[in-house]
Length: 406
Image (tube, rainbow, N blue to C red; front, side):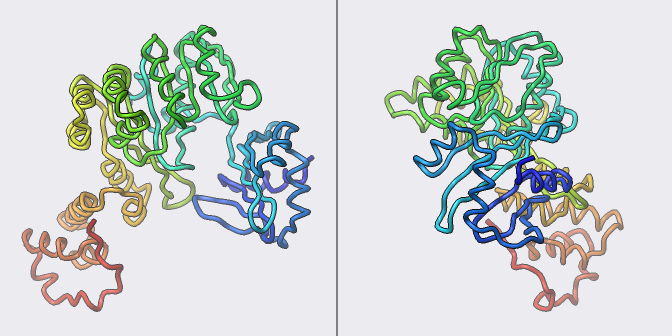
């Protein structure tokens, strides 16, 4: 057993997500989104180097020694896989490892709407999953591929750096290709995949212009393409893709993207009230009206389309966050911290608090204390007949965070 396995087993046992091994610090684990130091002595540079060199593959070792960082996957049989990055910082060698469970979560586990699940049954098109690093994009795409594995009979090619979730062949045949090990680059693997008879192609990340162009071409030529982009909202994803291209190609890419893009799923991970984390989603489903907005350079209208597209399976991030609050999964503070559109979230929070006051589940004073924008909350309470209960409140004496309206 490798030395690092004892730390990784501790991570799995405590339902953590990441292990950090850095020079001059004890091993650090991320549990429920928070970093926690293990109760062990700080590691020296030689100790960290020993932990790294015990598990690093030869190809990755050469790359690490040449350029001071590298990626690879490490597996503990019958426990889990770990996406691993080894790097050098000012203190010495370091390593970050992300847990990739053997058990793939299903679309039901993630609570994905049926409209999104149905998209993975399409013969062609692009489905994008977006969000910051560590928000569960790979987990969502793995769940969609698992659904396809159960309900389709196709050839699936995954191109990743490194390979993360490994799918067993159920009804589909999976060809897992790792950049640097099984292929030179994303763009080369994509180009060659056209001759490998794929039905579904997973591209780990659209990280450069040529990879993005080839992914769009793959969708146009009759393949279903799933990939990730590092954007925070579904609506901004379209602009990010188009802006990769030079101005003289953007008109053509808009047309191609409007014909091939089927959905964008933006997500973030929230801390549960008790233990663990849960995902909140913003979902854009591309129908004819959305496709027209993409073609006509009117993507600034996409947020309003998402707000009114519930019947198509669309959902704003704030709607998803407030749904998690109302269902008792997360706190108001957690929802507010994960929101991008703070002004809209202020309105939703105050409406929610007002509904609790109206139903008798909360006092007007408590509603004001929990509000993130108190003047608006006070005004709502007065307009709904609760002025007497809050008449003598002295807001200056309430120990609360400052109002935030952005």
